[in-house]
Length: 100
Image 1: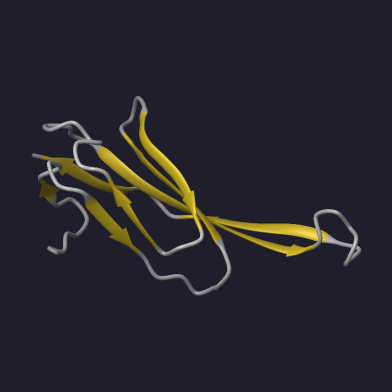
Image 2 (image 1 turned 45 degrees about the horizontal axis):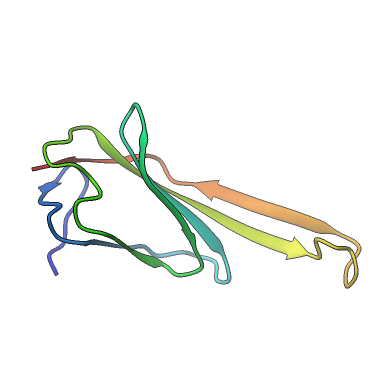
């Protein structure tokens, strides 16, 4: 594949693979691709890689943003095995790019 960095422009007639690093394991990630006006793609995963299908982002779209939200849960949501439950959430800043 080809690597792209912030503000790079690329062709979306191919699937787009996004990979990231995390300092914490066993997390859930919510990945959002959006413009200032609407969400183009949204998914949740336990992996640190997703693949966005080809043509998900319309050609010629400017001001596209990628945001990744990391969620880590602790304790027991049903309070059966532990007497506490908490969630830690970290959200990246918006990573901007344009589409050819």
